[in-house]
Length: 194
Picture 1 (cartoon, rainbow, N blue to C red):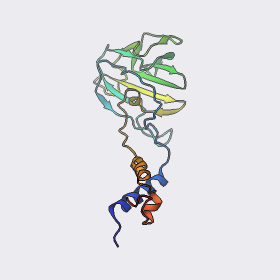
Picture 2 (picture 1 turned 135 degrees about the vertical axis):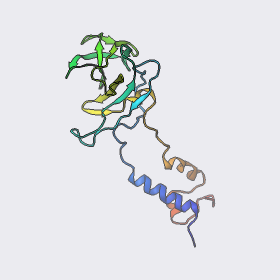
Picture 3 (picture 1 turned 90 degrees about the horizontal axis):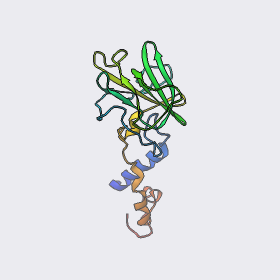
Picture 4 (picture 1 turned 30 degrees about the horizontal axis):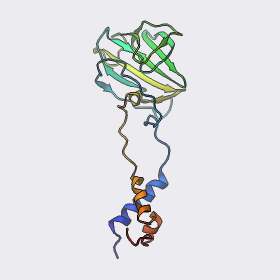
């Protein structure tokens, strides 16, 4: 007897459930704060988040957003400025948000360390020197929790697409009185249906 499509599907579900691990770095989480785009209007994403496999490895530890020189740069979340200065000739602003912080570069800061900023509050203007998109101007926007880089696009609902898990249909099996184990063993549920 050949297995039915349901048995094959449930076998796949069972294997998926047994191999499900933690979400990859940068994957969206249900408790992500809701922020605002640091450039208005909503900018083109020129380069997406690509976290390194190792802390010292290659990758893109943020996103690059197309902008124009002199454009106002805004804090994505409310917080306190924890850094405003130059690093390697590039203007950088970092804003702390409790357990996370966002970073913005190249920016001519209009804020100082200790300043409180609101979500959408101005922190500086976009510079050309140090742009990841040179000769175009773009903002490199980062988000960190401790030393772990996160995808800042999660803050504005534009992060990686997450598909519904395969096992979302399992409650339907309970309605039919069957469990995945019943189906895999070829037994019908309590209702006698699949």
